[in-house]
Image (cartoon, rainbow, N blue to C red; front, side, top):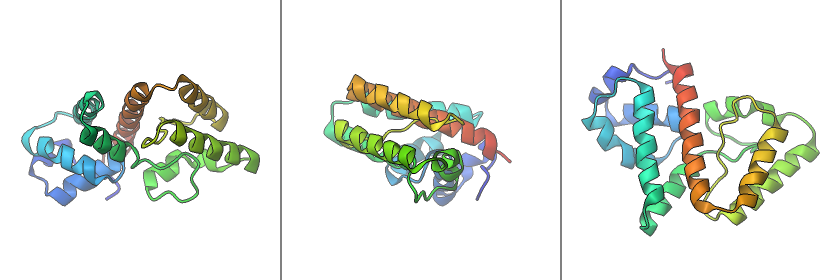
Length: 177
């Protein structure tokens, strides 16, 4: 499936159909499926935007939790997004979104790889997630550097959630038939 089903059909969709819709919006993530399928089954959403807002609230609640299992679940969900500039990206949406990051000098690509490594060392269990939205690699790397230097893991979780939901909103707009 390369387009999202009409939002009105979700409450009656099968689990695999719901998982596919979530994967198109957010990236394949069994922990996200487990977290979100119950609300998709019990709630009728007027739009994908409202659904994404509900997922944002669920993820933000995990971020606010002091329970280690919630932090682990959130990390697994956020790490379903590929690293920026990765050569092998499974998701068709991510491949398209990151296409311009694959171009350019090897030196810049290596700097991005080094920043990814530094980020993940600074924030164990997290992956840098940002809504690229056509921004050039230098702007993305500057944002990454600021976030590493800030050193606030709580703020990182919230920024990653927001970026993931911004990406999902953009995908929803593009993928609705």
